[in-house]
Image 1: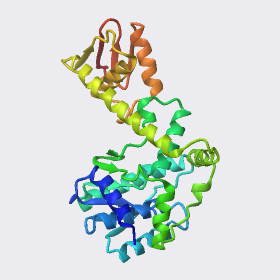
Image 2: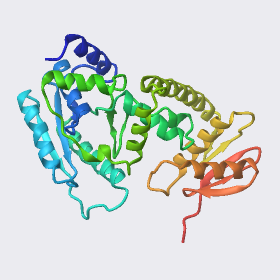
Image 3: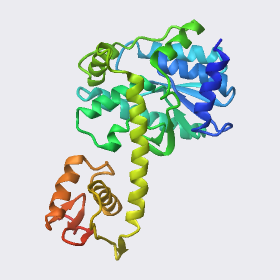
Image 4: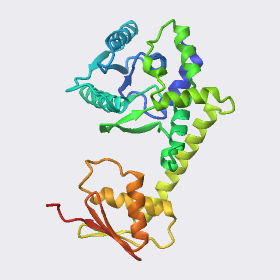
Length: 320
């Protein structure tokens, strides 16, 4: 039985992201965090949730782990589906990245089929702290350092919302909920494999007593708020752009560097026809900005851009 205070706290966190009554999907792997999410959601929104577990078919134990989640769901009267990834060929490199992409693709298709409004995951404050540190060592900007958002477009299914209602909860709190319920989570050996960057960062964070994961997660939340403020300013600046005849013209004037950067990214996103919709990489954007600020011309993602006092963006001629 989950303490009423924990259920009330979770209900408030979830209500801030998704109105009560909206059908919600849960991604439940069988690990302690997602199982705690399952128990909290079942108590906070009985009869309004469905769960899915993704069998990546990359470990012998994966099917049994999904079946264990199914058993917990049956005990709580929660609809549950196992989504098995059908690999044309099992990946031999970038394993976690490819597994993540296929996982979200399967969850998106499942959510649409069930008519769900959103899918929630068990990411929590310790995960957020790890994400902040990983991005910090890569030199990420404000947007990257804001970490995971509590509400974001679903990867591979952007029309759906991906919710993270546990970003204010610590890993230990979720583990305590599971222990009190007498449920044993599955043990994924990849969570101890230091070949993965996140595992290395997690172990380093655990060893550094002077680093407080809760404070790091709070910093990520502050940076997310700062990012929203920057986007508000960018939207106002974008309205100053002249958009006609399939071209975007912008006079940067004394606009701060980050505002210029995001205006350029918007122009490329609006006119680009190459890159398969992938977000611009920082290096690509840096090179284009350097050219524009030097008064030169450059082409990126199928967009021809020219610098000077006025920056002009137009679709580049089709490649032969």
